Image 1 (spheres, one colour):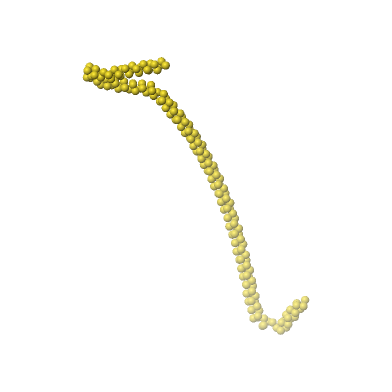
Image 2 (cartoon, helix red, strand yellow):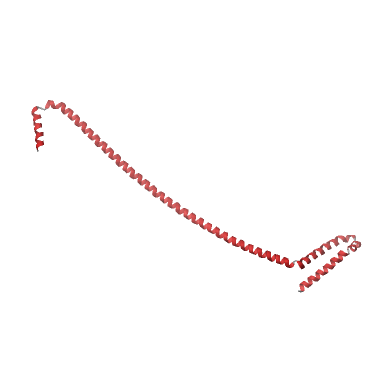
Length: 192
């Protein structure tokens, strides 16, 4: 309480000094013309002190309340921002984790696809080998068939040539007795 009593007494003193200076401006003018700037400066200070005294006297509690309210508002806003920051950080961590999982999944998928590709490649190579083997075998068989057909055709040609030569030479060499002997052999072979 002593502090407020002293402040009140100081305010009253300043108020009377200000009233005195305001009430007696002619005295200030009559004394010395060069005293006017000092008077104006003193009046500015008096006005400032009065304003501060009025603010302290009547606006002290509302300003305190306003500042407390601002403090609580700012504190709650900071709390909300901290909560939002924590939420965003957790989301960032979740996104980073998902990104890492996605990279791992992508690598696994890539490795699996490469392995499947290698397996498929081996299958295709094996199929190609089998097909080439089958084609070579088929070509070999066709060649053997052609060779067999060519041999048979050659044998037939040789037989035809031999028959033609025999037919050309036999009438000169074979007699009726030889023909009868051949016919008897053939007939006896049929009866057995």
